[in-house]
Image (cartoon, rainbow, N blue to C red; front, side):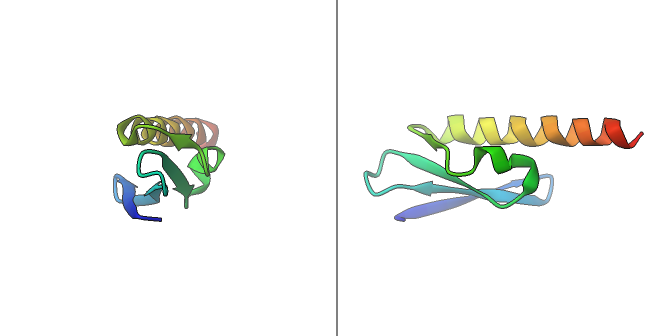
Length: 69
């Protein structure tokens, strides 16, 4: 691991983007259950990865809130 960036959404730590040895590929380390399906996914672009994580978190969060009501 050469570099990592934390992803926090609305104050919730969901994981980290890790720059791989090739210094081009980014891998996601999931720390929150709502984004677990993206754990270890690799992307060539960090922004695409971040967007996917945010979308997954928001979708899972919305589904959970609907099932509670």
